[in-house]
Length: 417
Image (cartoon, rainbow, N blue to C red; front, side):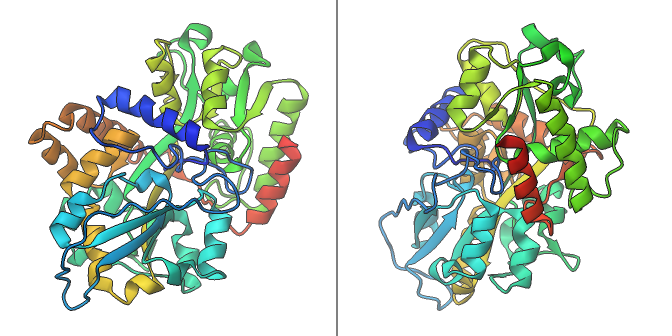
């Protein structure tokens, strides 16, 4: 998720938007970056967690207890991840296991994540790491992460099929890690300016001459690129070899199309940052924007009519989840207990409530139905809506670290500079 390179003030504001939407959760702290699922691989995405070159570390530990962990004797687990997967409170896990969790916010920057886990010390510094699941294969191949024995964990049987069959986390026919939060991204638009949802169903609204100078793409490529590729391919405007893992020719085709649009004055701006996205739409400087779904919720909270596009070309899918690092594998039982908990009731109810995204299992709905702290109807509605995006046969995962990663960065910089 997601999404998250916002400043602390932007993160707090985005948290409030979701809390108002969902009815609030008592005691929730500021979100460590709302859009951590959403940002850009190297394109200056200001919606990534831990804004800047260095991670912001927020330790969130609860009273420790004696650990009963199959001989591991672990008192604390360190968890370094995009804030989309951070529930803000870990007491439920500590009460259940006697193990504290120390959370550190990671930037939603795929290149930086790979570098720190493969060439840096992150795989030894943290027990669990979490970022975009399309990084799973390269991190596995580089020996930075270890497979999770998901089938042996008690909550796995309750996990949604969309998660059990997640392509980015599958290696050699088996699920290598959990996708703990996911969504499909498209376009936020103002129906009073663009048209009602019954008449708007294509990414083409971003390139419609009627809205010239009033549309926008994100400055980072990871949110926008795959949507534009879907638009060109599904409308027979280009013959791309791969949308998920674009070749250099594919990258050039997409960027050349966007450069022509830019030169013709189609885009108001290439936006960066949560508050900028919300402001451009709320002031109607932009009427249609490639962005994240929480922006729509924030606009509605301002009593504005806003919609999230249901694109005929398909959503740009993403997921974020936990990997067991080399350090975490040294006490695998404890690490897997945390991952099993992330498939459980309280965690799933909390994550959907404070993020608005699909968590991994049905247990969140069950938990909410028996709790006064959560809105079961809201959680179920969000789960149903997002699950449908993962089974529509047209939406695709965009690889955040393809072989053409450097080309994507350099070509996108051509566009946005």
